[in-house]
Length: 490
Image (cartoon, rainbow, N blue to C red; front, side):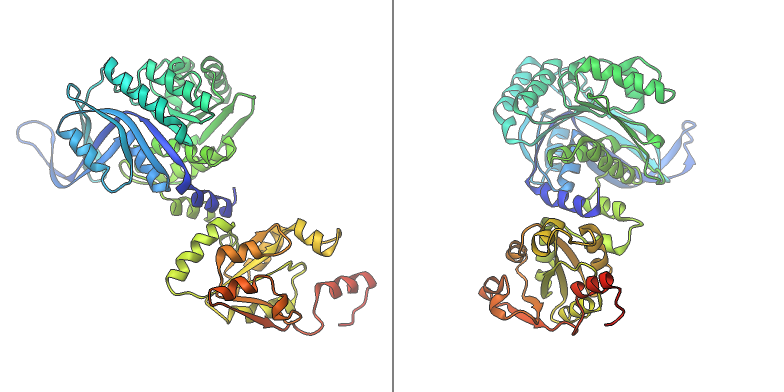
């Protein structure tokens, strides 16, 4: 995927409604220094300097989705204890719907305490329930899913084998997703994947896939055999196996396989990386990405996550930055309309004046450059609307454009005077002008103000039209004619 497509995806994330079902828990981190040995036993003494309480398990999946910009609801069962209260409090300010979180006074809310010194985990202490939830609370979850599932774009299942996801609950969730046409994305656990039958896609790591398939994964051949065994046995649409330093492998029911290499990065902690994969993959599928594209995006996010210590989230800005790393600046300037509209709104809020112009810009020449440089002087940001290839053909004839849309966009974006480039399919840029609401609309001096498309729109909110004269004698048509005739005259 190109950078502009990923930016567009994250711009749409605010409209995605995700339901997370699974085991909620608290992750407690005790940070300190370990510089001496206890006189009571041969163990390190950790002087705690900082404490941190975070959402773990399915809660970390929720955190990731919130960080990505989604609307999130969660369904689970927690204990009616102090840790349960702390867990609910940890959701404060996140805008998460907790109507599906039920309290069972007989259960213990899961809490994992990690003691860390010198960026190394010394010990982990677990307090938790592992028994399956009672029939009463199964019914509560089933009722919630049956009544609420239709309002979501994707369902995420985060299984930590703490008892919330009983076989009956899983069967109902997968069946509901199939019936409603909603992707059900599962981070699985255990040796029996039959309980996930009918899910859209599972995201096990290599060890988990070995356990479930009962096949030792030693090379690509054994990996494929294990994947095919799970795909056939569990009736999935796809299976994404994460393979640590070897990246990810996506196996699809139609026989296609995609191997995705790892993103090179120093690994600090793999805790929560699976939650990041689950969240980004699910967002991609909910936004309509093909499974392979969604998996590649999840792979990028996982590479960022393992570079952080503890259960952490990954932001859209980090993912976009990683995708754009090493690309030319022109890549960062080419936007889809929805992503550009958000940027423009923020820039206007900071007092920036937006200048807009448009054209085909086929065979960029000095007349174009001087025109754009002059246009930029009217404000703080210059956005260029670029006619798509189909639009150029309708306007200029079937032999045009000479240069494709993608190349024309990159050439324009390479100019210092151009801040952003956005393509449009229509014959006129009216839709762009209405969406971006520029303060200054610029066209060539061969136009009269009355002929400028968008003039009435811009003037309706106090903007203005500026006409800029092109360099005399410079045009794409004349350049093409010179090439055809072999003339060297200007």
